[in-house]
Amino acid sequence: MYKFLIPFLFIGTMAYAQSPLRSQIDQKAAEVESQVIEWRRDFHKYPELGNQEFRTAKIIADHLRSLGMEVTEEVAVTGVVGVLKGGKPGPMVALRADMDALPVTERNDLPFKSVNTAVYNGQETGVMHACGHDSHVAILMGVAEVLAGMKDQLKGSVKFIFQPAEEGVYDVDIAGAELMVKEGVMEDVDAIFGLHIWSQIEAGKIGYRSGPFMAAVDNLEVTITGTQAHGAAPWSSVDPIVTSAQAIMGLQTILSRNVNITENPAVVTVGAIHGGIRHNIIPEKVEMIGTIRTFGDEQQALVHKRITEIITNIAESAGAKAEVNIGKLYPSTVNPPELTSQMMPSMEAAAGKGNVIAMPPVTGAEDFSFFQREKPGFFIFLGGMKKGGDPLTTPSHHTPDFFIDESGFILGVKALSYFTVDFMESVQ
Image 1 (tube, rainbow, N blue to C red):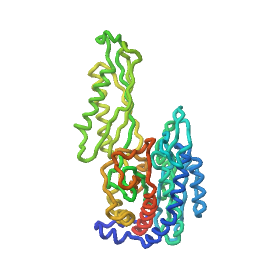
Image 2 (spheres, rainbow, N blue to C red):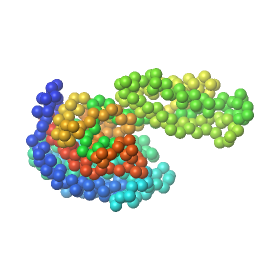
Image 3 (cartoon, one colour):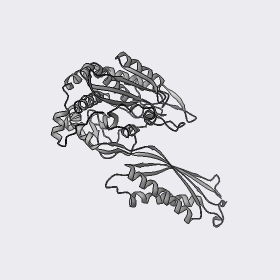
Image 4 (spheres, rainbow, N blue to C red):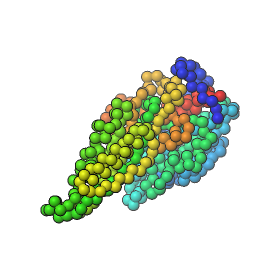
């Protein structure tokens, strides 16, 4: 274990953390840029769903081996891990990219438009890299090539983690980053860095946040059971539909009256409700499902507690019964303030000071958080919107029209490479 040198003075951090390898990284990143774009287009044309990234994984593994790395395949089902041993003693820095695509049928008219289809949850669907994981993989393959070209000068080693199933897998309980952690991928790591392409930030810019950055995500399942009756005689029933409507409205008071939204937001969304089968029958049962987004363990515990209390008590007041199940998925993605400050000079050197943007919390979720629970981890957003684009009209992630400007990829290569060598300089 290496001692972290994180000075209290920002200027001290900036002076200490700068690596003399930055100029070499700039040159090598420029040389590999066209190859990164070529890789990305190939992955985009042939996307694969979570835990099915067999073709993607083989291309990655072959590339890492060609660079002289020790490579382990089939980590957490289809994951690939490569270790680049530096020429000098130092920490183990991990870099992560997620590989999986989504069950989305692409509408973009591109020469490398997705050609793949699959069966997802029993339904035939198109498959698309509608969240930019194809760019993450290509960028990290580029970083691997850049750093392998200077491995004798590295003050430490680098672990390249290519992770499957970030979007989750509907038919297994544990996958992706959580399973990689369970299989020990973080045991010898001192710090980990990652990025996510972001379609609402201009290419050439970096978005970041110190502290809670992306939300924890949990699933909500509710069953409200009443008494069935004829729709013409509602007084004979305990109406679970009316009770459910009251419960849904009651949930909104959690955000307006219980959560301190001046610190961090929260979201409780009911995404589906089902009850009944006929227009003149009040059913016995109503089922609801939804999603919960919170920032930090304390806020998460509060919201979960209030959800259960509100639904249970509203049901009881109506004479009904409620069963509330909350399934925890990903914890909140939190950038440690000290590590964030330490990496600020690296971001500004890579992108230019005016191109580093402090962001508000993002209610989307990322399983990179599982890695951060094990070791210090820093996560950024990489701009992928065309320059001059409008973030309000640019197609968002997880949509058929999602589109990424490839001119920002070289910044991703530089940023992850800077993080690596600058972190190595800051430990002893």
